[in-house]
Length: 132
Image (tube, rainbow, N blue to C red; front, side, top):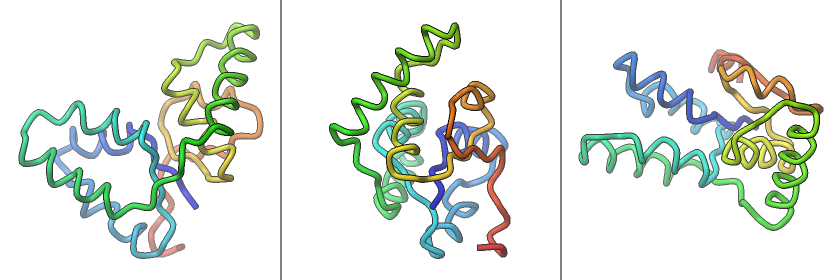
Protein backbone atom coordinates (compact mmCIF):
# COMPACT_ATOMS: atom_id res chain seq x y z
CA UNK A 1 0.00 0.00 0.00
CA UNK A 2 1.40 3.39 -0.98
CA UNK A 3 0.40 6.88 0.07
CA UNK A 4 1.41 9.42 -2.57
CA UNK A 5 2.30 12.75 -0.98
CA UNK A 6 0.87 15.95 -2.42
CA UNK A 7 4.18 16.71 -4.16
CA UNK A 8 3.65 13.66 -6.38
CA UNK A 9 0.44 15.20 -7.73
CA UNK A 10 1.84 18.75 -7.82
CA UNK A 11 5.00 17.71 -9.66
CA UNK A 12 2.91 15.86 -12.25
CA UNK A 13 0.70 18.92 -12.75
CA UNK A 14 3.70 21.23 -13.05
CA UNK A 15 5.26 18.96 -15.65
CA UNK A 16 1.96 19.07 -17.59
CA UNK A 17 1.21 15.40 -16.95
CA UNK A 18 -2.26 14.35 -15.86
CA UNK A 19 -2.06 12.77 -12.39
CA UNK A 20 -5.17 10.73 -13.20
CA UNK A 21 -3.48 9.05 -16.16
CA UNK A 22 -0.20 8.45 -14.33
CA UNK A 23 -1.76 7.18 -11.09
CA UNK A 24 -4.68 5.18 -12.50
CA UNK A 25 -2.63 1.94 -12.77
CA UNK A 26 -1.86 2.18 -9.03
CA UNK A 27 -5.56 2.63 -8.25
CA UNK A 28 -6.50 -0.33 -10.47
CA UNK A 29 -3.84 -2.48 -8.79
CA UNK A 30 -5.29 -1.59 -5.39
CA UNK A 31 -2.06 -0.06 -4.15
CA UNK A 32 -2.70 3.69 -4.05
CA UNK A 33 -4.19 5.35 -0.99
CA UNK A 34 -4.78 8.96 -0.04
CA UNK A 35 -5.88 10.92 2.99
CA UNK A 36 -7.80 14.14 3.45
CA UNK A 37 -4.63 16.09 4.29
CA UNK A 38 -3.16 15.25 0.87
CA UNK A 39 -6.44 15.96 -0.87
CA UNK A 40 -6.52 19.40 0.79
CA UNK A 41 -2.94 20.25 -0.15
CA UNK A 42 -3.44 19.24 -3.78
CA UNK A 43 -6.90 20.54 -4.59
CA UNK A 44 -6.53 23.92 -2.92
CA UNK A 45 -3.75 24.74 -5.38
CA UNK A 46 -5.54 23.79 -8.61
CA UNK A 47 -6.50 27.13 -10.16
CA UNK A 48 -8.77 25.99 -13.00
CA UNK A 49 -12.19 24.93 -11.59
CA UNK A 50 -12.74 22.22 -14.23
CA UNK A 51 -9.36 20.64 -13.54
CA UNK A 52 -9.94 20.88 -9.79
CA UNK A 53 -13.31 19.15 -10.18
CA UNK A 54 -11.87 16.37 -12.38
CA UNK A 55 -9.00 15.75 -9.98
CA UNK A 56 -11.43 15.81 -7.05
CA UNK A 57 -13.46 13.08 -8.75
CA UNK A 58 -10.26 11.07 -9.17
CA UNK A 59 -9.52 11.46 -5.46
CA UNK A 60 -13.01 10.04 -4.82
CA UNK A 61 -11.86 6.80 -6.51
CA UNK A 62 -8.79 6.41 -4.31
CA UNK A 63 -9.37 4.64 -1.00
CA UNK A 64 -8.79 7.14 1.77
CA UNK A 65 -6.92 6.25 4.94
CA UNK A 66 -8.84 7.66 7.90
CA UNK A 67 -7.39 10.49 9.93
CA UNK A 68 -8.73 9.04 13.14
CA UNK A 69 -7.81 9.79 16.75
CA UNK A 70 -4.85 7.40 16.58
CA UNK A 71 -3.40 9.26 13.58
CA UNK A 72 -3.92 12.68 15.18
CA UNK A 73 -2.24 11.57 18.42
CA UNK A 74 0.68 10.14 16.46
CA UNK A 75 0.96 13.40 14.50
CA UNK A 76 1.09 15.41 17.73
CA UNK A 77 3.69 13.10 19.26
CA UNK A 78 5.72 12.93 16.07
CA UNK A 79 5.76 16.72 15.68
CA UNK A 80 6.73 17.16 19.31
CA UNK A 81 9.58 14.62 19.12
CA UNK A 82 10.95 16.05 15.88
CA UNK A 83 10.76 19.63 17.18
CA UNK A 84 12.76 18.65 20.28
CA UNK A 85 15.36 17.02 18.04
CA UNK A 86 15.67 20.22 15.98
CA UNK A 87 13.96 18.67 12.95
CA UNK A 88 10.93 20.87 12.39
CA UNK A 89 8.17 19.40 10.24
CA UNK A 90 5.04 21.30 9.23
CA UNK A 91 1.86 20.26 11.00
CA UNK A 92 0.31 19.00 7.76
CA UNK A 93 3.38 16.89 6.97
CA UNK A 94 3.26 15.52 10.52
CA UNK A 95 -0.32 14.40 9.85
CA UNK A 96 0.63 12.81 6.51
CA UNK A 97 3.61 10.99 8.03
CA UNK A 98 1.52 9.82 10.99
CA UNK A 99 -1.14 8.54 8.61
CA UNK A 100 1.45 6.49 6.73
CA UNK A 101 2.94 5.15 9.96
CA UNK A 102 -0.36 4.23 11.62
CA UNK A 103 -1.74 2.55 8.51
CA UNK A 104 1.57 0.85 7.58
CA UNK A 105 1.73 2.53 4.17
CA UNK A 106 4.86 3.48 2.28
CA UNK A 107 4.95 7.23 1.70
CA UNK A 108 6.03 8.32 -1.78
CA UNK A 109 7.51 11.81 -1.52
CA UNK A 110 10.35 13.84 -2.93
CA UNK A 111 10.44 15.90 0.28
CA UNK A 112 13.68 15.04 2.05
CA UNK A 113 12.41 16.05 5.47
CA UNK A 114 10.31 12.88 5.63
CA UNK A 115 13.61 10.99 5.73
CA UNK A 116 14.10 12.28 9.28
CA UNK A 117 11.18 10.24 10.58
CA UNK A 118 12.10 6.96 12.25
CA UNK A 119 10.27 3.85 11.02
CA UNK A 120 8.64 5.67 8.09
CA UNK A 121 8.89 3.64 4.90
CA UNK A 122 9.77 6.33 2.36
CA UNK A 123 10.06 6.00 -1.40
CA UNK A 124 11.41 8.92 -3.42
CA UNK A 125 9.53 7.88 -6.57
CA UNK A 126 6.63 5.68 -7.50
CA UNK A 127 7.57 2.10 -8.30
CA UNK A 128 6.94 0.94 -11.83
CA UNK A 129 3.28 -0.04 -12.20
CA UNK A 130 4.50 -3.24 -13.85
CA UNK A 131 6.11 -4.31 -10.55
CA UNK A 132 2.77 -4.11 -8.76
